[in-house]
Amino acid sequence: MNYLDKINQASEYIKRKSSYTPKIGMILGSGLGSLADQIEDSEKYPYDTIPNFPVSTVEGHAGQLVIGKFGGKEVMAMQGRIHFYEGYTMHELTFPVRVMKALGVEIMVVTNACGSISPKMYPGALMFITDHINLMGTNPLIGENHNSLGPRFPDMSQAYPKNLIEIGKAASKELDIETFEGVYSAVSGPYYLSKAELKMVEGFGADTIGMSTIPEVIVANHSGIKSIGISCITDMAVPDGEHIPLEHDKVVEVANQTRPKFIKLVTRIVEKL
Image (cartoon, rainbow, N blue to C red):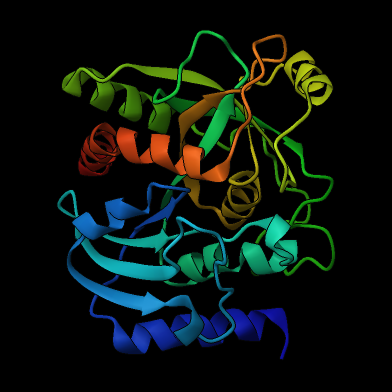
């Protein structure tokens, strides 16, 4: 079965079962998946029940597609994402975005938990992604291009449209939630970077560092889906700062603590989309 057939099989499976036609998709990162619990009148599809769908193996990622009503809109949310470091190919980990497109999604809200390279931010801060730097060593568009999915050479200069960032900033102002703007960078993982590596990434102009998001946004952009990215800062990855050993459970803990304002912000953004 070729890639297009796999996308069609997965999307048709959901179409047959779902009573919704959402235009908004959401990808929820580490510790942020509980936002999907706020979706009303929801339908839940465990990843392992959807044909050809990759299955999340990371702690803090529930691993199901949730479809329903949120912020007054019909949405579909990935409660738990797939990562490159889990052993999936780039085509596999971005497969859910292809399925979202096939189901009619036009705007994607993508979130992550990441470290801040900039000392201006702090654990628990929220940052709108204005641009990204791909340091993962590969990307999901390598290989055969299917013209029905998108162009061979997509322009990535507007991957995070300014009008969506402005909607996010307006929502944060209304809620009196402090937010930042910055450049997100991603490596393959699954280890937290050395100080020398952090200094290199800082020199490239990144404000944050993580292990996700960029592949999904590349495919969304290739597909014609507009993305708004929100990073939850869970730790300080400042190269010259004091060394504090970092563990995944601490990352999830900070993301959980940030959850109330994160849910409020995303809810208001969806209401305004």
